[in-house]
Image (cartoon, rainbow, N blue to C red; front, side, top):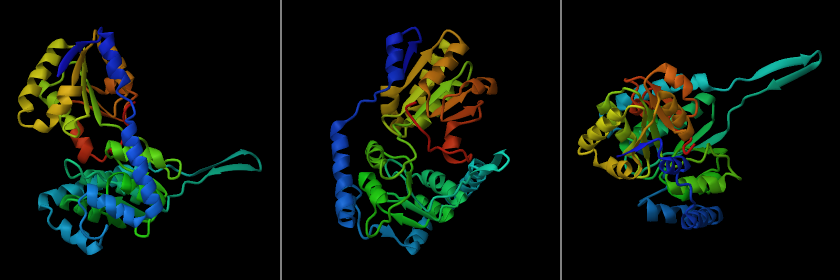
Length: 356
């Protein structure tokens, strides 16, 4: 992990600008796949699912297949899924927008009605690791909101994902991923109904596909690689390193950043990272490429820089600091508020905007 000074304006500009360049080849490939699915339906979905997802058998899993597959999940994991689901439901209830009515003058009443969508498509990545948490965090809010049909797309769903699907009581689950899954949700096929909205995280291809179909089918937002910014004055170096690794291991393009006015802390975190990465090699590409500690002159400058980066996840020492970190998808406060806990079990949602 690099350590730089906040006085290094050139390096800061690079961090703040991010690499937002468009991969034109990727965009063209995504558009070709989505257009093929839109025109040829199931046959195109099967073609790409066989090519990219190694699909065998039908696209859709039956209820019995989901139930039987879920049984392979270890009991401890099933218990953790139930616990996480309970927390997510509790938080989701608080997040439902409320209908209201007001009389502005006698005889003139204005009303806002909040009604659920009929059908949503939830995308669950199937890449490096099974992500039952992503299934829970996309489907449970929809269920709590009263959405009638909740469809899930996940290439090669692992038993834990199937256990999460059972817990969330999803309507249907399809073994498909990538741009072809997004195209199927957006435009529908004989097997896959078109949905009213597409939600969920995914690869660069999934994000490009969501952007491409957004004019025809609403999406949650465009998401880039995951990111964490830790703003700390005197945190525990080992714990900070663990939080950085927990995010970095998601994706080689993930961004893991420490902002601190304490140079000895930055040095100690780098030492802790070197030690911990021996046991977490999956995080090395991200830390080597995008990991950085920025040393500021003051705490105030560190907080301002955290806001300027506007990360998906922010972690900081105290509530007073958190109250000033107002430009982040989610903020974790205090030494025991591990970012990984929010990713999995606290009930807060990890499906968040990225890249500012």
